[in-house]
Length: 113
Image (tube, rainbow, N blue to C red):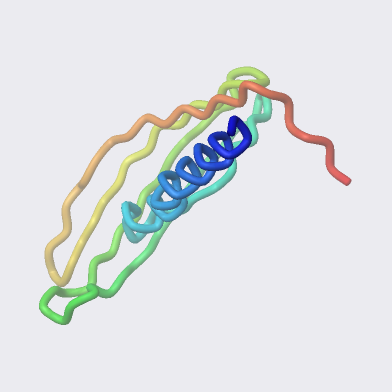
């Protein structure tokens, strides 16, 4: 009885989390990417991104975006970065945002094989 309930609970949990697997794909912009954060103390970074995407329906124009960021590995578990973003579609361009991103690595990096 307990084993059956546990299997049922695990199955429900897996099914409930399935939409989260693709959330970044659906919520990302043309200049975004998904990565696994590894923090290195003292690392300095200049990060540039550019991307473009066609609309899913034919009613809108192509959308493009770019960003530039500057980051620093404060210690062995914290990396911080600030960057600016711009977007444009057709002949219209605008500054979109200033974002501050922090990566935290609460466990050590696994050894490489």
